[in-house]
Image 1 (cartoon, one colour):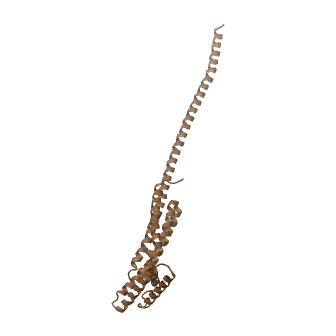
Image 2 (image 1 turned 120 degrees about the horizontal axis):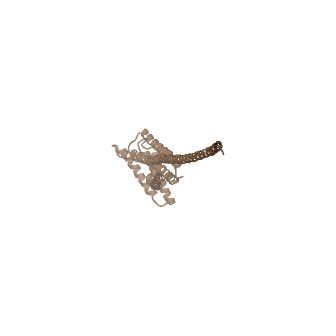
Length: 283
């Protein structure tokens, strides 16, 4: 074999090796690229998972903050409603009691009208705050609020009657302290007739007792007619009769029972309100 043949064989072999090595290097590069892509994809997935986790954590934090803010807002609304109701109930009661004391003096008609109007406005305000309590709830708070409102209405009714009684008795007392002996005598006469009525009213019930009461009431009317003109109006005189026939309005069992119910309901209301304001929001 000549040297030229050997050179040809070498060239062919070199070309074959070159042809084989090129696809191999390309294949290695392809594998490396796929590996790099898989690594990049894994890193991307890990990044997405981390980002999603961070997003949900942030969302949970915002949700928790929103729930806390809602709880604080709701508690603020309830606290204000509960406090307003308590103040309204006690204000109505205190206005009634103050009206009684004021009527022991010689009040002008406009002051009497203003006192009655103030009590009426207080009851209206109380009912409005009670409505808010019923809307806000819960029943453990709303139920004693209803009882308090009912008791307050009953008490202010009897306190208004007591104010009339106090005003009438105050007028009669001032007539009894008049400088004129004849005027004083008219007041003493009515006071004595009222005392007789009271003795008849406290006696046992019978037909004879009924006749005695009617006779005593007639004596009171006659004694009233002897008073100076317009000394007592019909409402005042009627309240005096009722008070001396049995007992003054605020000494009645109805008033005493209402006062007891108010105190008991107020204690239940305050206890339930505290529990509600300190408890978590129900889902």
